[in-house]
Image (cartoon, rainbow, N blue to C red; front, side, top):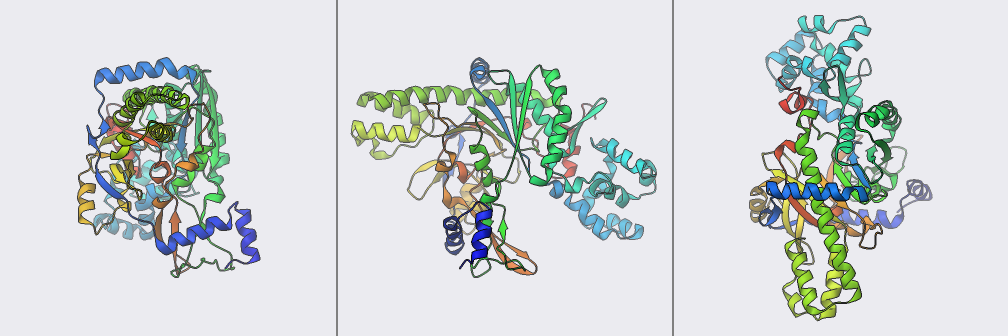
Length: 518
């Protein structure tokens, strides 16, 4: 099936034949749908902290954070092109001033372009856009007056100006302040300094970036490093990684044979955000906060985010400490009554579902069961009330072994023809904003190999095309879905203000991303 040149290509990517054969087998048999048992709700899988409990968890976090190495992990490799999809489409159709006015007047799906133009002065990047047009000998004010909107958009998106259409979200200016603006990556640095100081007063932050943007990211972070160190009285330790080529997956044709490029070489495609588990696994830290690059707020709205980050961090630390104590007890050997007490903790505080037969286990079998299920990575995930945003949600899920556990499930993982499953899906009360804090070391202080806690049955297959030919692509289990399926998982309700994603450029015009009073 694979030639000598194929084998060389596979080796150069850091992959192996076993992985490729497994991927091709996945294409042939497909991935099973998730089996929802029920929706996770307040009191049944989702923890709702009282104000007093939030204060207690924040205090616990503040009292214990100085003994841990905290890292903020920010997936930032995604291109911003999707943010500007409508603007790109408008440029393609606005081939003349008359055509542009026709498209806008008739809407034709370009109402958001009108919104962009009417609010252009309220974007944090407006001053940069004005300067780049001025440098070219023009005036943005005149172009607005003359309704030369296509030219303005061209200066924003292309190399003629700011080139925002080719940059990652992390290198776009999101927020304006009196006298200055901040890139989105800067807001994450501010967050890291606010709740992520480690035992040595160092704020560690790690960005995953695409290879082509690594140099620019490094340059921009280095420019502001000293400013934020002086502002917060910390040392800032930043690092980057790129998605490993070995995590790319092979593409196949409609007959599940390896898809070939025109030169005969194999086609590999990125394995999706689940591939970043390798990057997370490489980090040397005790507690890892995970948050998407586009989910940030300006300073005036940051307090709830800091409070609840510390609260879920404190909850993780407290439960992790209890778990470690129990694991040490279990390792030394303990009584049947004590096993039952620890099992009750696992059930009520860690939301681990015990089999009905557990009560009939021998003391030794109970001990083995508890060690196996307690000695795992642990994550506490913030959940916001569902207000119609697309994406995953919290559910109780039954796996192929019949085990029921808390999982984050995407709608694409559900069989759309199964009315019972759809009913459960549509009764979800909460939404996953990708707001995680992770404990990645075991009770002996050793790092877990996170690759051992993935559910390989939770990948995803999509149909695409290249050079006019149909192909099938495969994504790895999602980072906060199947890639963490075998972790100890807790869901905590967090305020909706902590979730402010920027999916389209006009999201930056929302009040949450604007200066106060605008």
